[in-house]
Length: 355
Image (cartoon, rainbow, N blue to C red; front, side, top):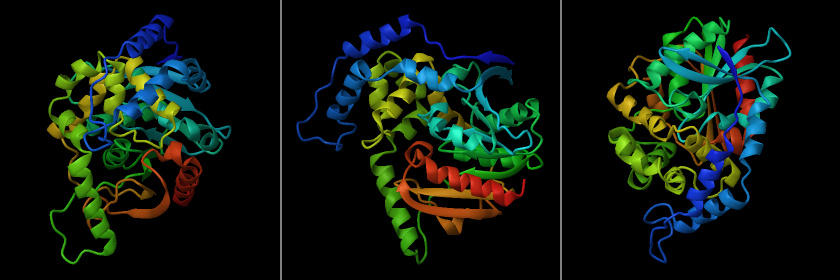
């Protein structure tokens, strides 16, 4: 295990600026809006901010304010932040991010949470400062096994697993494979199977069906491509930072803080993990998470403008739902969009476990 600090060479930043400035922009219809995909107006605004307003060195300073390390687990390099609470007996939480995110998803909650908890925040294998993966199979199951080993090495015999996006798959899987170590699981998306039909759906279920039908028809292109042909797409995205930005903006829709968007996109670009990060979709398609239900206590914080689960189907995946709170505040990146609510929800869940 070695200490780590983020220090991107200036040549890499200069190359990024040259590539953004030299973008060959595609044509589009004048009235296209979002009807054909991410609009050029939105990407141009972000690209201009990338060139003239975004401060990567400020991002480095924020990340380097926390202790960081790298180690090797199961043949791959793993980067993680390890933020200790002043109380040595405080409970520990391992936080997992998703795609197209990074450990930067959690920067707004690390300080407040670390006042009460020890925090371990890894970069997923193939993402960010973990660097590109060199072997197959790094889907949620293998990642969960790596997290169990990481926590064992750090000396945590009992801890909470929490996550967002892919982290909301990895955290429950960690609880499934290491129930003696994982005291509870907290997620911001409680994934359930999408039913083709529900008899006598409730109003909430009808809204969820409508939401998921709209998402499948309008926003699921990234999932299908990355689950089938991530490497084919990677040639374009690894060569064009604005191409990468446009693709990530399938998820980073308008309304998000531009610096948050560009921080995460920059991490993918500057660490050379554009291709390897997308592979998690292909790996999950080839080796899906097993169907056995989890049994450890599970807490869900459901935010607005995000995935809506089907409550009657949750028991097939999770037998011990201990807390489920629904909020009218956004959103998919709750640790950044609604940090106070997430901090309170996660803290209250951990308190309820009696650790």
